[in-house]
Length: 180
Image 1 (tube, helix red, strand yellow):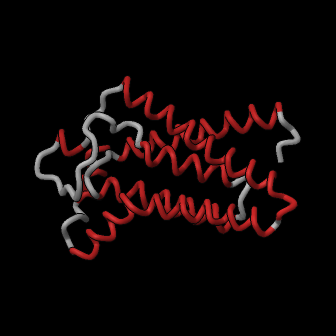
Image 2 (image 1 turned 135 degrees about the horizontal axis):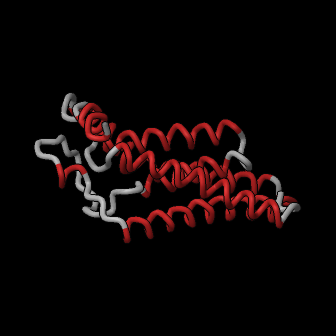
């Protein structure tokens, strides 16, 4: 099933040059745009509402540290669990770019951006959280289409992000009720 879904999505690549450019943009460059907009939102809030400087700075740092912490866990899993990328296992796939070789499961991009989505849901307006979620989905799907991740890599990243954010939220909010 993993291979079937991968091949279905990967067959979208190399159909139209403009679509390949869009897929590469979403898989490699959209993450920077998401982070930029997220940081711009907080920079705007910090400078607009000077009296709440510490509150917004604390929120932004908490959200980013949480996402990076869970991403770090995904990298530890990558280190100990060998999972070759699709282009190393399958012949004749549509590979739009190469990326790593053994660090396929779970997807680090997916883990980070879904962690960012899930944790920012508690702090940012719905519009920003929805933008981050939409971006995370685009990045994840485009990395499958580009041929660098299996669908299970993406699913594993989403599950890790969900569990990580759930546990961190429970721990932090249980011990720091005055956090927000």
